[in-house]
Amino acid sequence: MVRVHATKASINGYKVRLLLSMLRVPYELVELDMYGGEHKREPFLSLNPFGQMPALTDGAFAIADSHACLVYVARKYDPSASWLPSDAEGEAKVAEWLSKSANEVHQGPWMKRAKIRRPDAIKVSNEEIDARCDHILKLMDAWLVEREWLALGRPTIADVSCFGPISMLKVSGYDTDKWPNVTRWLERLKALPGAHDIDGNPF
Ligand SMILES: N[C@@H](CCC(=O)N[C@@H](CS)C(=O)NCC(=O)O)C(=O)O
Image 1 (tube, rainbow, N blue to C red):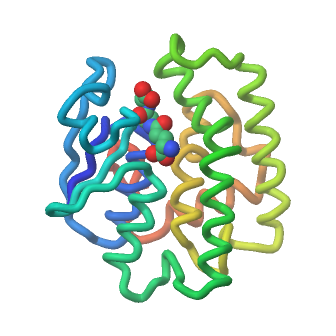
Image 2: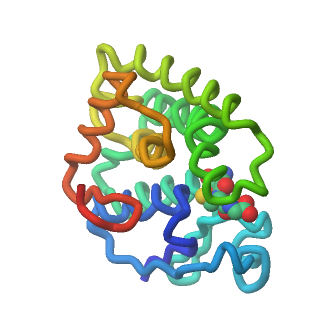
Image 3: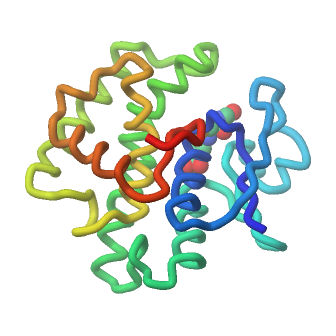
Protein backbone atom coordinates (compact mmCIF):
# COMPACT_ATOMS: atom_id res chain seq x y z
CA MET A 1 0.00 0.00 0.00
CA VAL A 2 1.31 3.43 -0.94
CA ARG A 3 1.32 5.91 1.94
CA VAL A 4 1.92 9.64 1.65
CA HIS A 5 3.20 11.08 4.92
CA ALA A 6 2.35 14.78 5.12
CA THR A 7 -0.08 17.28 6.49
CA LYS A 8 -3.01 17.61 4.08
CA ALA A 9 -2.23 21.29 3.54
CA SER A 10 1.33 20.55 2.42
CA ILE A 11 1.63 21.71 -1.18
CA ASN A 12 4.55 19.37 -1.76
CA GLY A 13 2.47 16.50 -0.43
CA TYR A 14 -0.40 17.63 -2.65
CA LYS A 15 1.75 17.19 -5.76
CA VAL A 16 2.27 13.53 -4.92
CA ARG A 17 -1.38 12.91 -4.00
CA LEU A 18 -2.43 14.55 -7.27
CA LEU A 19 -0.29 12.26 -9.41
CA LEU A 20 -1.43 9.18 -7.49
CA SER A 21 -5.03 10.23 -8.05
CA MET A 22 -4.54 10.87 -11.76
CA LEU A 23 -2.87 7.47 -12.13
CA ARG A 24 -5.68 5.90 -10.11
CA VAL A 25 -3.24 4.43 -7.60
CA PRO A 26 -4.92 3.74 -4.25
CA TYR A 27 -3.03 5.32 -1.37
CA GLU A 28 -3.41 6.35 2.22
CA LEU A 29 -2.60 9.80 3.54
CA VAL A 30 -0.77 9.50 6.86
CA GLU A 31 -1.61 12.92 8.20
CA LEU A 32 1.02 14.72 10.24
CA ASP A 33 0.32 17.54 12.64
CA MET A 34 2.69 20.19 11.30
CA TYR A 35 1.84 22.81 13.93
CA GLY A 36 2.44 20.13 16.58
CA GLY A 37 5.86 19.48 15.03
CA GLU A 38 5.20 15.84 14.18
CA HIS A 39 7.44 16.15 11.11
CA LYS A 40 10.37 17.18 13.30
CA ARG A 41 10.43 14.05 15.43
CA GLU A 42 10.36 10.29 15.12
CA PRO A 43 9.00 8.27 13.44
CA PHE A 44 8.90 10.82 10.61
CA LEU A 45 12.58 11.74 10.91
CA SER A 46 13.50 8.18 10.02
CA LEU A 47 11.67 8.71 6.73
CA ASN A 48 13.18 12.13 6.14
CA PRO A 49 15.96 13.38 8.45
CA PHE A 50 15.43 16.85 6.90
CA GLY A 51 12.11 17.04 8.75
CA GLN A 52 10.20 18.15 5.67
CA MET A 53 7.06 16.74 4.10
CA PRO A 54 6.23 14.73 2.11
CA ALA A 55 7.68 11.27 2.39
CA LEU A 56 6.23 8.23 0.68
CA THR A 57 6.32 4.59 1.68
CA ASP A 58 5.36 1.65 -0.50
CA GLY A 59 5.77 -1.56 1.42
CA ALA A 60 9.35 -1.59 2.68
CA PHE A 61 10.41 1.18 0.30
CA ALA A 62 10.65 4.75 1.57
CA ILE A 63 11.49 7.98 -0.24
CA ALA A 64 11.34 11.64 0.75
CA ASP A 65 11.07 14.92 -1.19
CA SER A 66 8.19 15.65 -3.53
CA HIS A 67 10.17 15.32 -6.74
CA ALA A 68 11.73 12.01 -5.76
CA CYS A 69 8.24 10.80 -4.82
CA LEU A 70 6.86 11.94 -8.19
CA VAL A 71 9.68 10.15 -10.02
CA TYR A 72 9.04 7.00 -8.04
CA VAL A 73 5.27 7.02 -8.58
CA ALA A 74 5.59 7.76 -12.30
CA ARG A 75 8.20 5.07 -12.92
CA LYS A 76 6.45 2.46 -10.82
CA TYR A 77 2.79 3.08 -11.63
CA ASP A 78 2.81 4.54 -15.15
CA PRO A 79 4.23 1.73 -17.32
CA SER A 80 3.56 3.80 -20.45
CA ALA A 81 6.15 6.32 -19.15
CA SER A 82 3.83 9.08 -20.27
CA TRP A 83 4.29 11.21 -17.13
CA LEU A 84 8.06 10.62 -17.02
CA PRO A 85 9.64 9.53 -20.28
CA SER A 86 12.74 7.35 -20.22
CA ASP A 87 14.40 8.64 -23.38
CA ALA A 88 17.31 11.02 -22.80
CA GLU A 89 15.72 14.10 -24.33
CA GLY A 90 12.31 13.67 -22.76
CA GLU A 91 13.62 12.93 -19.30
CA ALA A 92 15.98 15.91 -19.46
CA LYS A 93 13.10 18.21 -20.46
CA VAL A 94 11.11 17.03 -17.45
CA ALA A 95 14.12 17.42 -15.15
CA GLU A 96 14.59 20.99 -16.43
CA TRP A 97 11.15 21.99 -15.14
CA LEU A 98 11.47 20.00 -11.93
CA SER A 99 14.54 22.09 -11.19
CA LYS A 100 12.64 25.30 -11.86
CA SER A 101 9.90 24.02 -9.59
CA ALA A 102 12.39 23.29 -6.80
CA ASN A 103 13.97 26.73 -7.16
CA GLU A 104 11.98 29.60 -8.70
CA VAL A 105 8.52 28.15 -8.10
CA HIS A 106 9.38 27.15 -4.56
CA GLN A 107 10.95 30.54 -3.73
CA GLY A 108 7.95 32.45 -5.11
CA PRO A 109 4.55 30.71 -5.41
CA TRP A 110 5.20 28.05 -2.77
CA MET A 111 6.49 30.67 -0.33
CA LYS A 112 3.44 32.88 -0.90
CA ARG A 113 1.26 30.15 0.62
CA ALA A 114 3.81 29.17 3.27
CA LYS A 115 4.00 32.75 4.59
CA ILE A 116 0.25 32.76 5.18
CA ARG A 117 0.35 29.45 7.01
CA ARG A 118 3.59 30.04 8.96
CA PRO A 119 4.35 33.78 9.00
CA ASP A 120 6.89 33.27 11.80
CA ALA A 121 8.96 30.85 9.69
CA ILE A 122 9.09 32.87 6.44
CA LYS A 123 11.22 36.02 6.84
CA VAL A 124 10.99 37.16 3.22
CA SER A 125 8.75 40.23 2.70
CA ASN A 126 5.43 40.01 0.86
CA GLU A 127 6.77 42.44 -1.74
CA GLU A 128 9.79 40.26 -2.41
CA ILE A 129 7.65 37.11 -2.66
CA ASP A 130 5.27 38.84 -5.10
CA ALA A 131 8.25 39.99 -7.18
CA ARG A 132 9.53 36.41 -7.27
CA CYS A 133 6.09 35.22 -8.38
CA ASP A 134 6.02 37.86 -11.13
CA HIS A 135 9.48 36.79 -12.28
CA ILE A 136 8.75 33.09 -12.73
CA LEU A 137 5.18 33.52 -13.96
CA LYS A 138 6.25 36.03 -16.60
CA LEU A 139 8.77 33.50 -17.90
CA MET A 140 6.24 30.69 -17.76
CA ASP A 141 3.59 32.78 -19.49
CA ALA A 142 5.95 33.45 -22.39
CA TRP A 143 7.04 29.79 -22.44
CA LEU A 144 3.41 28.67 -22.70
CA VAL A 145 2.48 30.94 -25.62
CA GLU A 146 3.09 28.12 -28.07
CA ARG A 147 2.94 25.17 -25.69
CA GLU A 148 0.17 23.41 -23.85
CA TRP A 149 2.42 21.79 -21.24
CA LEU A 150 5.73 22.75 -19.66
CA ALA A 151 8.15 20.01 -20.67
CA LEU A 152 6.62 18.00 -23.52
CA GLY A 153 3.58 17.91 -25.76
CA ARG A 154 1.65 16.14 -22.99
CA PRO A 155 1.35 16.53 -19.23
CA THR A 156 4.28 15.23 -17.20
CA ILE A 157 5.33 15.27 -13.57
CA ALA A 158 6.92 18.67 -14.30
CA ASP A 159 3.41 20.09 -14.79
CA VAL A 160 2.14 18.37 -11.65
CA SER A 161 5.00 19.77 -9.61
CA CYS A 162 4.63 23.37 -10.79
CA PHE A 163 0.83 23.18 -10.63
CA GLY A 164 0.82 22.49 -6.88
CA PRO A 165 2.13 25.87 -5.71
CA ILE A 166 0.88 27.94 -8.66
CA SER A 167 -2.69 26.64 -8.30
CA MET A 168 -2.69 27.88 -4.70
CA LEU A 169 -1.70 31.45 -5.57
CA LYS A 170 -5.19 32.88 -6.07
CA VAL A 171 -6.42 31.81 -2.63
CA SER A 172 -3.21 33.28 -1.24
CA GLY A 173 -3.91 36.74 -2.65
CA TYR A 174 -1.83 36.69 -5.84
CA ASP A 175 -3.86 37.16 -9.02
CA THR A 176 -2.72 34.63 -11.62
CA ASP A 177 -5.32 35.97 -14.09
CA LYS A 178 -2.79 38.54 -15.25
CA TRP A 179 -0.88 35.66 -16.88
CA PRO A 180 -3.33 34.31 -19.53
CA ASN A 181 -1.20 31.43 -20.78
CA VAL A 182 -0.46 30.28 -17.25
CA THR A 183 -4.19 30.52 -16.51
CA ARG A 184 -5.03 28.34 -19.50
CA TRP A 185 -2.35 25.82 -18.44
CA LEU A 186 -3.84 25.70 -14.93
CA GLU A 187 -7.28 25.04 -16.43
CA ARG A 188 -5.90 22.31 -18.68
CA LEU A 189 -4.43 20.47 -15.73
CA LYS A 190 -7.59 20.90 -13.65
CA ALA A 191 -9.54 19.23 -16.49
CA LEU A 192 -7.43 16.04 -16.47
CA PRO A 193 -9.14 12.89 -15.20
CA GLY A 194 -8.49 12.36 -11.50
CA ALA A 195 -7.37 15.94 -10.83
CA HIS A 196 -8.47 17.39 -7.49
CA ASP A 197 -7.70 20.35 -5.28
CA ILE A 198 -5.51 20.25 -2.19
CA ASP A 199 -8.51 19.20 -0.07
CA GLY A 200 -9.23 16.29 -2.39
CA ASN A 201 -12.28 17.87 -4.06
CA PRO A 202 -12.66 17.60 -7.86
CA PHE A 203 -12.28 20.93 -9.66
N1 LIG B 1 12.27 20.04 -1.38
C1 LIG B 1 11.19 19.57 -0.55
C2 LIG B 1 10.57 20.73 0.19
C3 LIG B 1 9.60 20.20 1.21
C4 LIG B 1 8.90 21.28 2.02
O1 LIG B 1 9.32 22.45 2.04
N2 LIG B 1 7.84 20.85 2.70
C5 LIG B 1 7.09 21.71 3.56
C6 LIG B 1 5.61 21.42 3.42
S1 LIG B 1 5.00 21.81 1.80
C7 LIG B 1 7.48 21.43 5.00
O2 LIG B 1 7.70 20.30 5.37
N3 LIG B 1 7.52 22.48 5.82
C8 LIG B 1 7.72 22.36 7.22
C9 LIG B 1 9.11 22.65 7.65
O3 LIG B 1 10.01 22.82 6.78
O4 LIG B 1 9.29 22.72 8.84
C10 LIG B 1 10.14 18.84 -1.39
O5 LIG B 1 10.01 19.17 -2.59
O6 LIG B 1 9.47 17.96 -0.88
